[in-house]
Image (cartoon, rainbow, N blue to C red; front, side, top):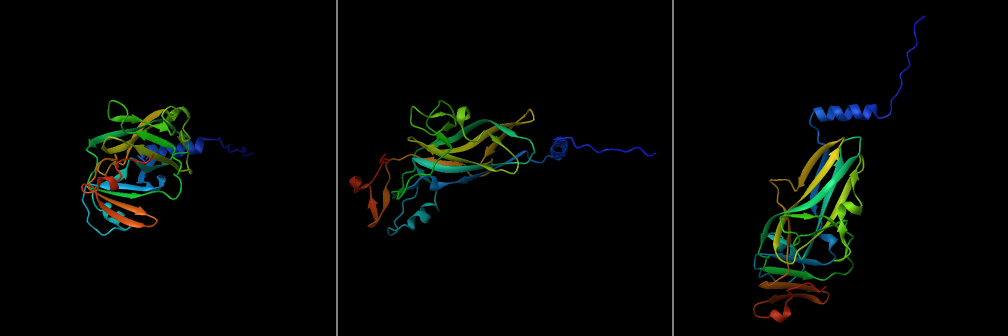
Length: 241
């Protein structure tokens, strides 16, 4: 009599085999994408190094973004994490790496106060903190209440089929900062590091409030252009809160 052979499914074996095959062919364990996310900040506060002389209107913001530019004081960014493995990918560390600290952009400021409230951020970087170039990620809070992100951050691992979005708020009061996010993660005991935006692509940027030559102030009653050297009292050189 021919023996009966039973095929027994062992949970986890097939996904593990697929993962090992992906490892052999150098498929990325984790893909990461960085985007600017200015709508995180309710108002529109931008600066450029260029001195613009256009007629005042909300459309001037498009011209600001054609030059070297950044959000003023606080900027919004988003990093999307997507797993390419069946097992869980653990986040081991998140830092901002400040590549350059320059004088704040002081050509033209674009100021449009908010009509609503800020969107909630998951991660905060205080770019002026720390003695070196690496800034630890925090859970947003006030000066006393902010906590290290990995102590109770919302996203601490990534699973296949569920992209995660790190919504980031970065702040500076001192510089035009160019920076990137470094994420350390582990998968099945192996340690990995990824940087976003990657080398070769423009870094994230945030600039401090400060003196500027020209200001476009967009109000409900209309838009105004001010020469801040001739009319310094009409211009805003620091945030309202």
